[in-house]
Image (cartoon, rainbow, N blue to C red; front, side, top):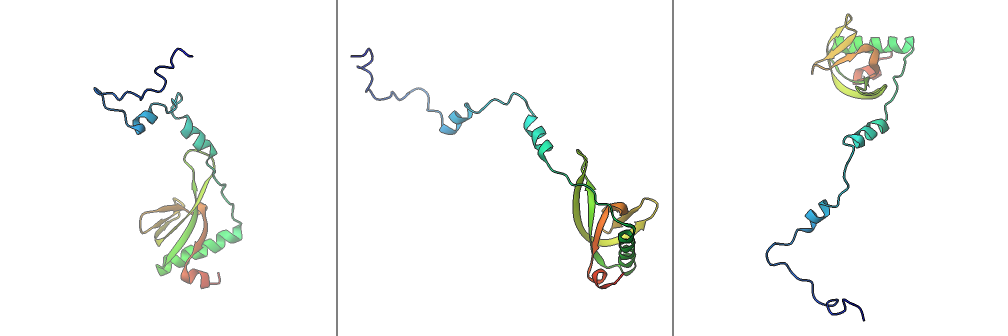
Length: 137
């Protein structure tokens, strides 16, 4: 016979003064303590993959130049795929945007679209458009 056999099978007492804590609040008090704030985001930034810029040949650059000139002269819309450098790491990613060319700035070396997007000519990988694809540059 044990020392607590007399109270072992008694019902659990329900508090009368204080309401019971909700289960969601009880679970929150057992969450792990984050001793190093920002460590998780630093790990995610390290794991994030960036791509490298593709270098075009002179022939490919000439074809892109002709496509740019054609889109600028006709005012047609095109899809520009260009390299966007990453702000935090080396490398970057290729982004595609659609638009009409507002101006080609040879001094800055960029193409400005109607929506204000400025794209460096050196970063352009590909240009697609309805008339551009049919044109045998």
